[in-house]
Image (spheres, rainbow, N blue to C red):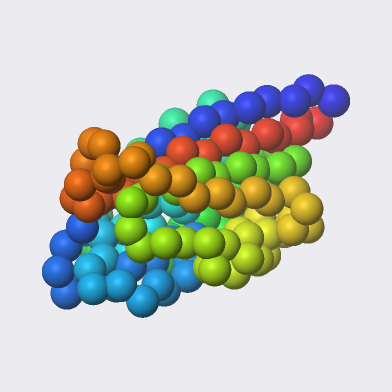
Length: 159
């Protein structure tokens, strides 16, 4: 068995009159993230990590923001499509780890639901999914409350 690892990173700025959705969970907050889809920065980073481990480019290549078909798209639907794509190429997902970087809102209480969503979408046990949140101690664009970033890593098995 060959093991492959990929990393993903994404950033979205805050915007008025948008829902804040992270790992498929709608959070109570006064702003959401700006993007062509639902702007779920965490699932975008995770999708890129999975695609990267399979050497299959990134979500912008497969689901371009120039395509009206993806306007307002649910990132969980896109993530499930990514799973189908890598599975068709002979890969299986071992485990994933996501870190969300946000000064606000506080995410601690929502992390179990985020883990459940990802585990469901990736067809993995919750023990194979990690979601963490951190702040930047008020440094950088996240610390100033301008947006949220996310990092993800995925381990796939080939064969």
